[in-house]
Image (cartoon, rainbow, N blue to C red; front, side, top):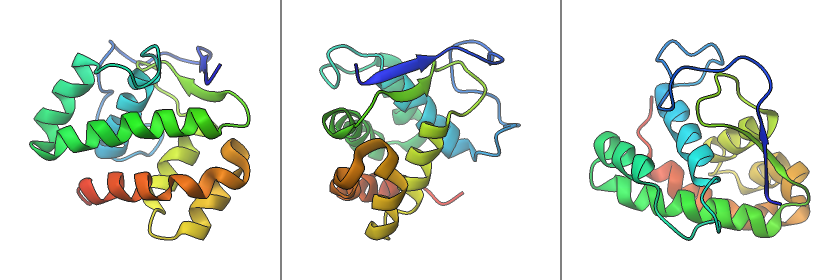
Length: 147
């Protein structure tokens, strides 16, 4: 099992990108990427299909780059699944809090220009193979606007 869905804690609003006044301190772009990762992790088998809601959000938010971003996020989910040492804890898409593993993934995207740092951030999830995900993380980061 790649993902362990954590349903504890307060729930966010309806199933959609959460509010802009984020209590976890995430930027709107980070919150949307996290929401997309959570939804994509629910698709079975992993990486096998497009999630229509993720597709629509990314196209609306990022335009033409949304398709590339969607592809890279799906590849990240599959890549993590193949390298994970344990189930990765992700909340359900509508959950308001951010799990520790989710924080690691967002930090790894932000640190993608520093491969040694990414490997260290992902070590608890993927051991010594976390550095193998740097090209995917760098591709995601390159498509995201600076907030």
